[in-house]
Figure 1 (tube, rainbow, N blue to C red):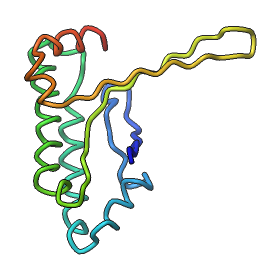
Figure 2 (cartoon, rainbow, N blue to C red; figure 1 turned 90 degrees about the vertical axis):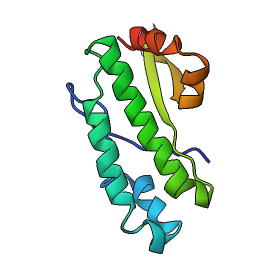
Figure 3 (tube, rainbow, N blue to C red; figure 1 turned 45 degrees about the horizontal axis):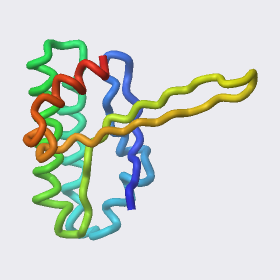
Figure 4 (cartoon, one colour; figure 1 turned 60 degrees about the vertical axis):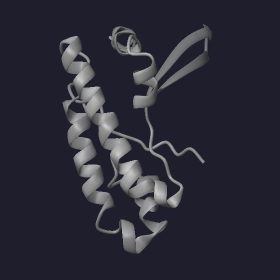
Length: 135
């Protein structure tokens, strides 16, 4: 079951996983309380520190390095913590567009793009395409 974990970033640091107030993030510890109790908050703090560095206003090489570190951190957590309990974390970039079709009616269009190393290893040129698209 895909679960979207919410964030509440700022303009300069828009990527932040609000695990203290997000009900779904808090409920992950209930899957195996004795295992996740002391590990999950440390993972989220470190993951947020990686996300905090991510900005698409940097040079292309720096953005690619920051995305790679975020994805690597999440995939390391998948191997060491989550896969044992049939959980997989994937970082997505999601775009929501709203267009007013008629007065009072709004049409929403959502696009999502998963960030995984297997995808970027197979299509390395997608890094630059993604960065330019987000900008």
